[in-house]
Length: 543
Image (cartoon, rainbow, N blue to C red):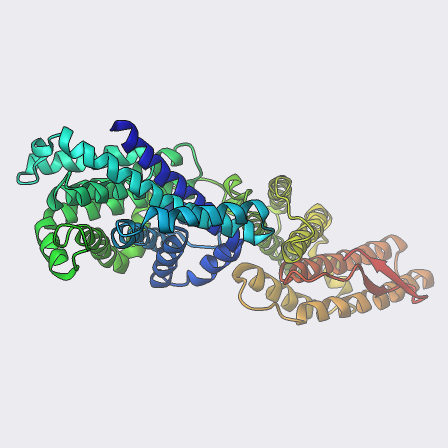
């Protein structure tokens, strides 16, 4: 009997894992892209989490993706709270599958053929058909597991008296909730625990009230796994785990207090499944969905405040400029590359602000410290990207990765040159040659785009860089001519030429950085052509 029950649970878990892995592999990065695009406001984030979890039948998979997006800076923590709440509701879809299909499917006629077809597709298929075969086989194994579980539970109902766990008093209800928590912790899956409870209800091992309090415990118990996984993990992972625990405990408390009313409503609204006690398994699935939906309605309007409370409980003490470089997202190349890109944009905005201070002639005493800080941050980005692999066949991801590396190269050079930045006196001396006002405007545009990432960067940045290159060339010739005529000290002339060259290089590096960071994944040109300073021809410079 015990072996049959454990075997049924094991088959159900195996089927869930196969189906989840198959669906995720078949979808590729589509789920990640869809989840990141649909999580606009809190309501949209909630819907994204619910739909994604219902599709892959795994709240853990949704939460892991969400943690990655928060770590990479693609989602705010408030949005992540919405996704987690949605995932909590989406995972109740498993109960509906089991209650509406699980007890009606003939294993021999339906489930076993699914396993066979899926196995053949996995063995003989190519590309996505292999993943589809895994998902189909997993779907069939789920029903085989439910069938075995029914047999074990039928024997269990004659061997174990659950009267001691009566749902008629508070102590009995608390014991049932505790038993539900233990079931989820042991099985490491709330879906499997709920399926086991539905099977026990179907064969009469427990009644509807007992099953309801077991499900409440299972809903709370699913947070134990997330909490254990978050120990020693990144700040976004710990915050997500805390939010998950808080939400499920609050929802569990509400469900515990209102269980009689919930059960009455569920029994009235849910039709009885053939072959089950009146309103049994379907009513339990409705109860599970109902109290999670009520919890979502209670928390979602206050998601921002809820997220702020959790953020205060789990503060993030990492440097803000490299906060998105979380090693946990390195396994998701597209997300990891985006995390690096957002970090490089922060560094670029900082350096653009320093160059603007130079152009304005403002005090730049902290310049050396900024140079060291940005150089260290760029080194962290390089080390982070060292663990990320984007195969060339994934053209868009590979080019985005390449473009981020190009941007890092330009910012590296700019950070190194900060110590050589000219002072206000030299800028005044060359202002008749270089359009400092236009340079300042272009720097402002670059800083604004790097800080906000809204839309496309202004083409004025590149145009100003091109005009500066022309002005630097003519100004260099005029300055050297003055030195040759004796109207300007040759040492001063060379210092002014260095000042022009520094400004030209600084704006060029920032423009190319912006260009690459805005890239859409298309292949960039190999080089840019600029006029030769002497006007003889043209020279190629690194892009």
